[in-house]
Image: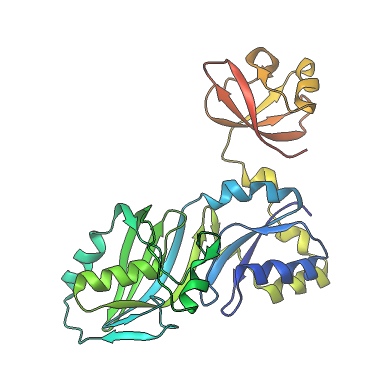
Length: 294
């Protein structure tokens, strides 16, 4: 099995738990996920299988979309409602103020990651330090919010849809919005509805995956490497260029059929066998390998 299976992660599992369980369900070792979800978060977790694991780096970079429930009037040490409450305040904000606060976070932002996160400082995970009662300085990291839409307000709860870049902490957004509103805020719930092009509608639970294996329909649920990469244009090597392809060497434009002379392309042999992703480099007038799938 090679490609991507879209798992709907349920509450209580880490992303690594999902991978471990899939290894048992699918009876294969070469499996990797494409973007961590907190244990209490739910939703879309694309998981790479076999040769699909070579896609992990590419897919992790993709935009993510979430639905989140923010509770105003409370601050916690984890920035979500699983943590210890540090402060509680009355909530007396208007819909207009909430929408204005949300809009202020749109675009490029510098976000300080929470102490309760898996990021490492001097080789140690931040949440391990936090559990020891230690707080260390964290560098603000650039993130991008493409959309923050207020879906529902039922104070102290606010439901939002957020589209953002990789590495963005939604619970930190909830915390920061609460600070901006002057009453504090923490994340109550989180559902990832989209990761890159993969949607909640495509996803299946671990139980549904196990059922598909038993019924012999699991192959139908796996998205092939070629399908995942279908947004890149296809080009075909001339017969004379296939020896270079086999060795992972660049190809001069004269050895490639097709008019695509920019960006990334899907490279095929002259007989239509998919080889990998190549990048056209104008200054060299050649296609260079980015990821090979042979």
